[in-house]
Length: 423
Image (cartoon, rainbow, N blue to C red):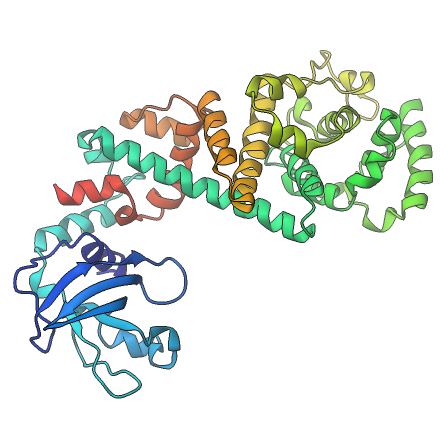
């Protein structure tokens, strides 16, 4: 038995509601189940119930056993003073308020169909990577669509939260936050944290003072990255430039160590040196990334903006004095889409929340629907089950669904799992 199952029973009223009684034999009528609370405090808020002849408004608390109230120290927490009903699977002791009055308790075990519990336990104990895999094809399209919408919403909220944390660290500076977010995504997962540290240690305002000179921007970036080594005339020039700028802006104390970058099993085109050179070129071409990403309404316009080639040296090299067999073509279409999905979408979601303007969230969703889906093992699993993955919207929702619902067996927070239990 889990509290999640009892949450489900209460939220969807999946028990025998005829002649509902408290453990003290008072009649209960549920007028409003309340709103599920995912933060600290009682499990459901804004509930309305009638006990006997009296109507109550307040919170509902859920436990496996009544005694869990004291085990969780709710008796000392003022947030639980407004609990109007204690819903439990098993009633093993009366629970008192601070004033000594007993909290009305509803015991669900005697009034719940045992088949429902059996179905839920089958989902929890089966060995499928996706618990509902055997029943998935029987699930309605409506449940699938609702599940993907819910999963994507959760993913966007989580990504917006990450941007919000960066924004707070940057004291509300949207431009600096956008630059750091973009830099992080130039790391393409394997070097994302190193790129973020590089951007955090190298303020955009320093780079903007020299954005008309690509060599100087490259010198500052490569010097600060810890990857700059003397190998040829080009690297010597960068070292000379970096010595001047590191002294001018007091940069060396925050220089990264070369070992922070991951190079093994990385294709030359995705080497951090190549990505740094591409980011440096982009810095010289764009005055405001924040305006670009929040005010551009066409995804094709954004794609064209990022269709850049790094400097000539880095079209032919993947490290200092180490040449590429075939000349690089700059940022490819897949890389551009990856950058836009992981930079523009979270930025728009966060900006929408901060400005309380749905337009930016709608644009983020529209952009996702226009991107082709990515390909990975999670997407392949969903396709094998018969789930249509037509766009990045579907793909991102599928990834979220697997990572934060299926793999954690949160079937009772998923429309698909709920439908399976109801059948």
